[in-house]
Image (cartoon, rainbow, N blue to C red):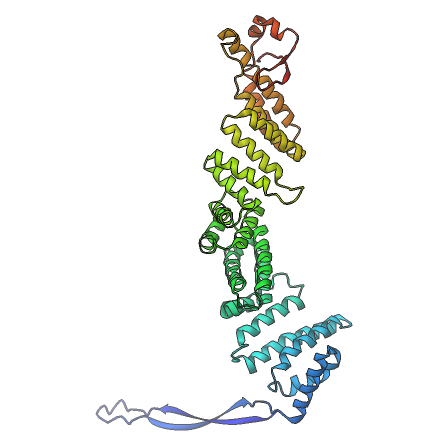
Length: 472
């Protein structure tokens, strides 16, 4: 390759010496001495007719997807006249991807992937100032390809730097695959060292999610639909990572809900993400649910409003929303129907409508028997809170003793709840607490007609048969 010689004139200041013994002697002015220095500068490679012919050749091969045939003419142009055309690099990615996939051994694959990385550096050198595809764009491409070519590099820190610079510079003009890969690499770093990369991952996720949201909402963007799909994927990746608490999620999405509450799909997707990470008691989740419900009531939005009302102890509103959620279920079998029924039972319990609470609790356990433990506990609480016997029906003393029988029925329900592992601890505590309120031996002796047979049917709305046993 030819070299040009560049002559540079340097001014070197050479001071004259002043004699210490002759202080009055005038010091001579510095003398400017011109020195010639030879600096080598690499010349821009010459674009020959042969190069242009080779460009045309590999381009046609690529159009026909004959990438192996394109390799040799492409390589000749890449090595000898790398400034001939940007197609050297755009088509080069396709050619090298094919060659890598079809390489016969590791040595060949290593050569190809090293060439691929070098190719991006050379593109930056010669075309890094391109208005449409600047250095930041090229770095994004390089980062994506690095992740594909070097799967053994689990951290991919070098690629992270390229991708971050690309996304920060390109912004809304970032390629979707660059945004997705950047989120994946950042997620991988977080999983490798949560303490070190936790805040970084949250910041990266927020940046990528906001960019994807902008592209998704842009009616002029031809990539809007794809951006929506990738955003959902990136959101899910973040949700299952455990990187953020519910409070942190609220911090990230509070303004988002306030400015996007008019978009139903956005609110529903956000609610779904909050649900996956079990943050459905969050104020932002409630705000999204309320916004979605105003636009178009759905099962999800109604359930969200129900939970919001229950948290505020507005039990009647919660009941209405839970019933709407059940009515809006579109599938015959729905994973959340039992939760809605249990929610209704809990609301009725708090309104002291115990018979209604038991009705919905029983319906909930019929829908999902594996979750029956919580229902047994709630029914037991309803029994324990009841006083089905009054002094109007018998003496006050007798009614007081009979009302203690509700604790037998309640403990029976708590005992059933112990069949479910997640309810054992709570059930044992409740059994210990309420067993103390059973009728005493003396009280049972005073009412032989009621307790003499050893079994008893608790009266009123309860109507449960139980076993008589005295308090210990």
